[in-house]
Amino acid sequence: PECETLQVEGDDSHVEFCRGRRFLFNGVEPELAWGDLAAGYVYGRLKYGKGHVDVLADFDFLTNSGSQATAASGGLRDGPHQALARQLLAPGYGQGTVHLVYAARMPSLLRTVLLQGWPVWLPLLLALLAWLWLRTQRFGPQCPSTAGERRSLLEHVRASGQHLSRYNKRPLLYQAVKHSFQARLRRRDPLAAALVGDDLAAALAQRSGLPIDTIRRALQSPASHDTVAFRDRVATLIQLRNRL
Image (cartoon, rainbow, N blue to C red; front, side):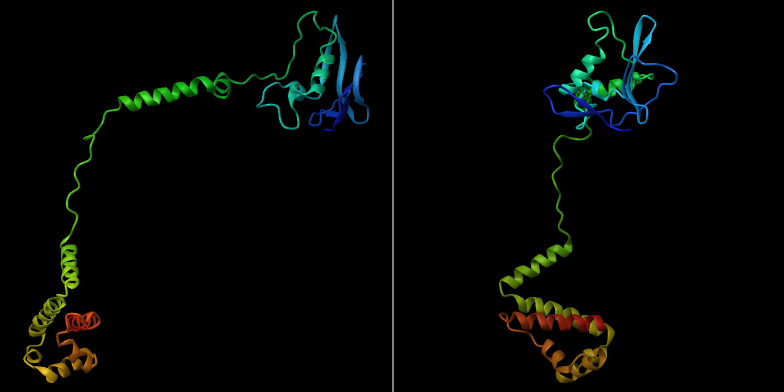
């Protein structure tokens, strides 16, 4: 392939047949030819019977569809292409029928309907889908069921603890944790559970590995307004309970 220059009067220089395959004449003398013997020809007019046969490298300049006309080739919308098409039809212009053979194999009917008939079948398809959606059987009630209670027992306990802590009832929470710890201590180590004061703190420190001062403070109830002491002592009692 090689471009061929086309100059139309009153227009800029133009090129054609850039993607066409050139051809040669084998023992045939054309009436008109465009090209040369070295590079090949892009157009030739041959006498055939009482008429003529025109041979072209490609038909890009004759396209009239927006999907086929590319940015490089605007089809018959370009002035040079119109002039070239007019000269191509010159021998029989207005005297009969011109047969343009652009492909020996026609596209299938299904392909033609899909590519060119979508303005018709696409709205019909959407209308059919909408009708099927309206006629579809509905399963279940239109309104969703009322949501049931989702709070678990742990959520209720946590909310109760936050309520007591908000209203300075931390000593009650501390006593609950301490009673839980003492109940497990009586089950796991009755001898240590019988001790009190420093003796109990020393026994728990030996058993758990925690500092004796930390255990001694954990066994004393914190003030209701001391949030830091409450958290530390409750955390220590929970550690002691888990290590028993």
